Length: 606
Ligand code: SAT
Ligand code: MN
Image 1: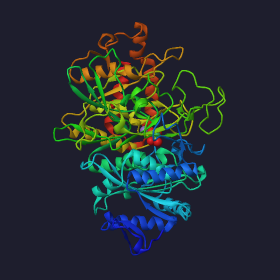
Image 2: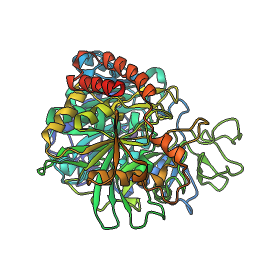
Image 3: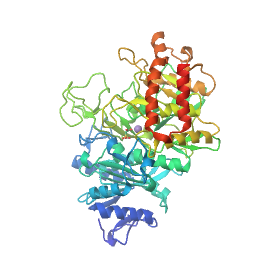
Image 4: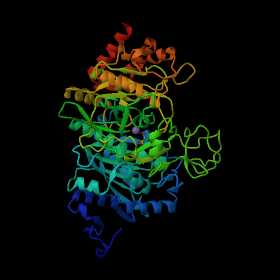
């Protein structure tokens, strides 16, 4: 942990407590103090400042290969790609162990777990006490967003997990770039992470919104441990956004280019593991000549109001942390192309050739697979890859990466989509009547739960704007913020709802999905430009059957009718659930949304 002065290089200095710091932070007292304070409690053997360089990565990777944290896979087929097998108890986000520790309980609201900040800190500090003894403490300066953008933010994550460092290197701009942007400023998000003993009994993921502080212990899993992601860019950032007049959202960003080169940017909120990555990387099929889709982001979008009265979006992340199962050449050819190099796979299976495999990668599983826990796989009994197995891969490797990806201003958004996984009820696509109605549509989104979080899968729950697990404050205040943001712009995006997951009476999907979703996006682009035809229904504007381009698809007119049907009875029973949901949010619920609910009821009954 300490070095002799004579050992330091010209890039380093030794502080008063005899610890080595990079010269780059010589005048950043806030950062120095943060690191000192954490080291005092966690007592690591060594402190390493991550600079993001290739040499650093090589050393880290070699260490992880040696101690088994990483497993080398077939380097000829997957150059610079590695596999990590996590503790079987630590494979997804743990929402029941995630807390918003605002000073007042009411600021966390009814959808978050809350604990008093000082009480929680006492508990966490007991767990951090000496937790890095015998380990290395890594200090990760990271930049979220394009270099030099007024919308970008710096965070410092302190962790004892080299796996976290390796992932953060892909997911963020790590190291020097971040320190350069930070300079002497104390304006950075503080993140403390220790894997502890990985026991769920001693696992907490805590956000302290008033202090821009994250404390996480006991998990090495993505959303629990890569603190730049959900903890910083959504939970903490949503609070900053409320205070500063912008929006931090769980949304993908996509550019669509028509054959006559018209460019339209749209964004979309979908719950975890509901196809955001596939949609963000959509490759238009052969039938859609001249159409191009440009990827900007697959998970998080920060929206600011531009001088032209529109929302402009940046993706703060630099990598993808995508769900592996189901990814194949048909569902997401761009992903298959992207993850072939420089990627980290977590909890996937391995073939006898040493290449990664997961359910849905090929029609039939290859023989002699090793499962995600490193055991010979027993087909039929268990999954070979964990259902929430993941790939971490650099976004700039995507063949469809948008030339605007690093634009400091971001891109202007013309439409937002909300979409949950719903086997029944919600039609393929509909358009809201106006901004406030669109906020109502987002606020009442229902979705079946997925393997991205620990708990039962396939249960419909309310997941407003796909932000239920990620909103860092009272969800009703968050709805109020959405309504206000709409009134601040002269040209708010149009709001749509989509559902690719509707099934027939036999449980088969009615819509082919994946690359064919471009047909729905084309209708959305038409609507933005005052073209596509629609019928007015009680829930919003639904496409006329003729207005969707279905050429070359094998869809019967009955199936199409079913996909676009608004079933009044089913909506009336949904309405009862929405009423209960609104009641559960208490009296902060904006009156405008209560009015939208009443209006929906009268349209359904009228
Ligand atoms: O939480 S993660 O970002 O790791 C994955 C997800 O649930 O979206
Ligand atoms: Mn997500």
